[in-house]
Image (tube, rainbow, N blue to C red; front, side):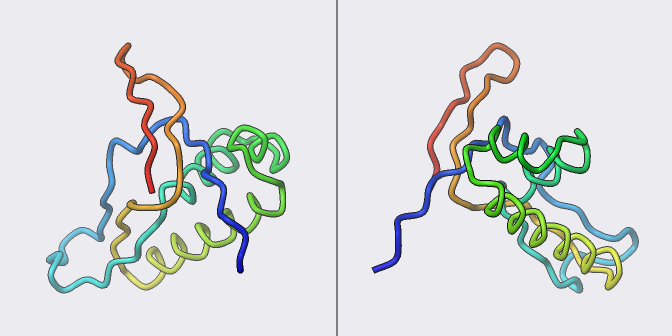
Length: 110
């Protein structure tokens, strides 16, 4: 029996969850799903410039797990950019850990 998967810690859910190439109708595009925790891995490593070990600690996962999430996310984003696909950020196995705008938005997702 496989080990139960730990929830990843995500500071906020993304405010924007869909990206697509300009000028192509949504119905004509292939959409790539990017998990919320993959989005968080890219935010921490690439946008915030944190080391993988520091980012992994912030997400409550091991460094190898963080590395796998980051590799997966980068592959999906590069596929979308190079091949003109849409990206939809959704799903995953995470817990939101921060408040946005003074409102407690901490929630548990499956």
